[in-house]
Length: 239
Image (cartoon, rainbow, N blue to C red; front, side):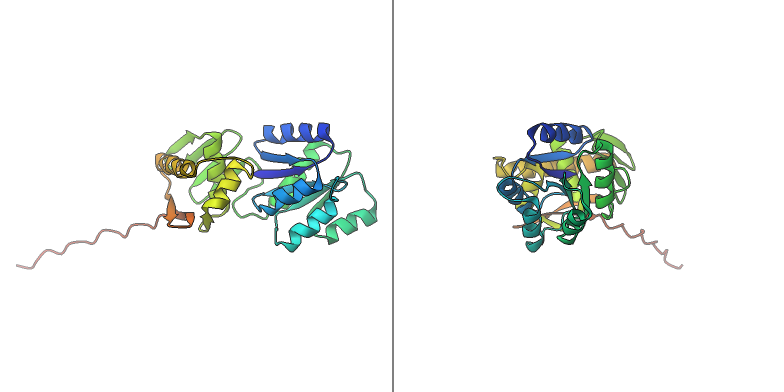
């Protein structure tokens, strides 16, 4: 799961990034509102943690701009402004939750689980993701299917999560580059094809019926292999 953390307190930003990564999340962090808007506009995040009092552009203005651009990722506003009116304003602007500083990290994790629970492929545990006949644990980096389990690299796991979160949907190459490598990474075009090849082998290793289909000129799509029809019984000729 990919998280955007926009927090101008560098010590808190660093601590939360370290803790979230320790829970298996992929985290992109920034320190001001302009950066938060730029990252958020990429529309690649499963959840956005947004400080309200950001320099350059206030968090509520970032939130308003993202919602106007149809960025529907769950947003948790994190702020020291904790009056009832502050909470109402934030929620009315499109936030999914409102967390007042100071807070316990366990409470933040619980709120992340809550706002992401609407996804059909995520279960109550944030480190587990299931789809059809496979289960992926981003904490153990382990993919399990009907025939066993195999360990994936961090990059393979990020790519797999992108597909598992959006099964049966075509994902453009540009979207996959953003989700897996991030908006500021320089990566060769062929790297994506290599990792798709690796994932195909991993799915085959665990005996999954899932396949990654190439959509020529666009990208890739995760599909379930259709079941083979039962063999036809041959009829013996009468004598």
